[in-house]
Length: 462
Picture 1 (cartoon, one colour):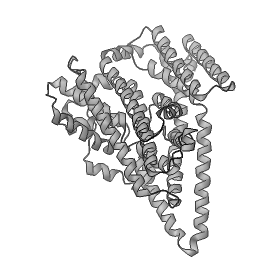
Picture 2 (picture 1 turned 180 degrees about the vertical axis):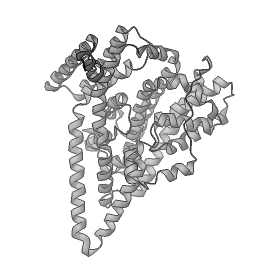
Picture 3 (picture 1 turned 60 degrees about the vertical axis):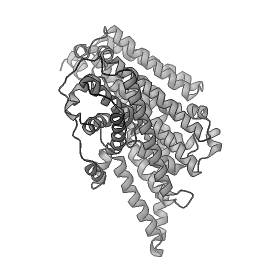
Picture 4 (picture 1 turned 30 degrees about the horizontal axis):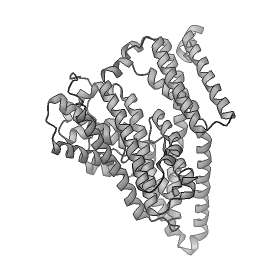
């Protein structure tokens, strides 16, 4: 293999602009390292990293002449940069996702083993599900209001594409699919609800065995192993979190250079409304916190780091370790409530993916087809959004699935191809949706824990 082929096909370092971009990236990392050494707050470093990533992505797109997605395929240096930025960004997300299943297993079993120490499991389940689904209903209502108010879809051309609607199973089949008949497969497919169900059986089995005199010693050993495993995973999580600002630069820049600005322009109204819905839900979450007698400004300051990473990582499941850590260590949420609600909230009651996004797609398609949008239509959309937020649990590509469930639920299933222009820029939309998902899960955990009386106000206010 020649040197040119080696650099081009294997290392992806054949273009001068690729080398230049990596040098600039290294300088960005140096700046962040200096800020860290000067003990600048983590939140400030996250914001600096976010703006670095935005500026980097815009400049690279400008150098390329703001190409369309089709034109980007022929710009080889841009493809090489995406490979390297993807390496740094996706590696961080991969390490975070590596911790998801261990955290759920150790934390949920630990909750059940210590269930007598102030945790009412029935009340916890009820309040957690209520707030997750209630905030999703609000999000769907917000999505409808914005889409109808701005006439989303009225001035769009009828875009067509070869994207077929995702297979939509019946609600009963979805519930059966959550049973972890193959625990290893459930873990590999990010079926979080299935993993939670598995850990519940293990935890209650361990409690039953602990009541048998002959197995008390073994039960105590098992409990110690679970406690040690939980503490080890928490230490690993805190170590990985230290590298968040560096990953944010790459994740943000890569998202911008991977999606042509031309496609964004064509769907600008949809993009604008999704981000406006994100802001509205952000305010709703702060109001819910204030309604529970807690300082929303304190909540904002302590949760912003987690939200910024959610915005750039675009993965609610990958955010689970950081979400739990923030809830317990910064917001004073009981470990049981934090682990339980955050775990459910990573795949159930997603405010963005299952709330305002599918609601907007329903109005969008209705306006394209000239279907009248009346009160009964809006109520149906909210109901389908709530049920759909349960139905997408543990399914990859949740936003696409939620849109499929929504359109099938209101009788528009055969028109899914009209969403081609929206799905073409899905990563841009996914950033806002993921932030809303994580913010909704955290708000639900705080509200549920405050109502259960187990929130540590000293940690929250400190």
